[in-house]
Image 1 (tube, rainbow, N blue to C red):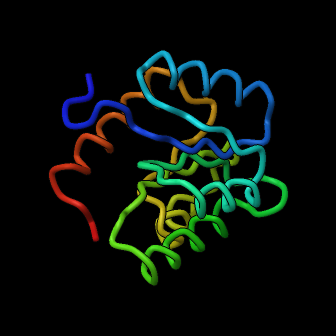
Image 2: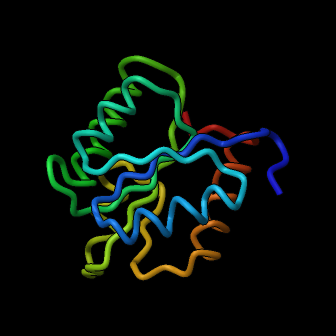
Image 3: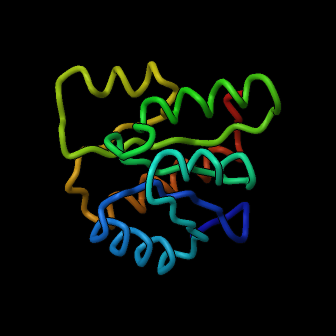
Length: 137
């Protein structure tokens, strides 16, 4: 399944309890090492203190929304490291301009909820496996 790395570390930033449980179980079952942040502020603090290969984030969270969190992550990466963390934004509110807003904020991808668990896992796997081939930074 995952060719270039034994365990991918994923930060899941999600405030909905049911979505948290479903996503964490699917990520773990698929061989990833997920960690959960219950809001954007907690996700930011966890990001600062850990190394993640990918952040899956809900766009509408208390504390700090997903767009603000993505901008902070990209700004931090530009100033401090050469590590690039992939970011996938998730939202049940699929406005026409939402995808462009997410890309402008520094996200790699935007997916509309509800998302089939197999679909999100496939997107995550493809993104992480490609990251070893060519880093964007």
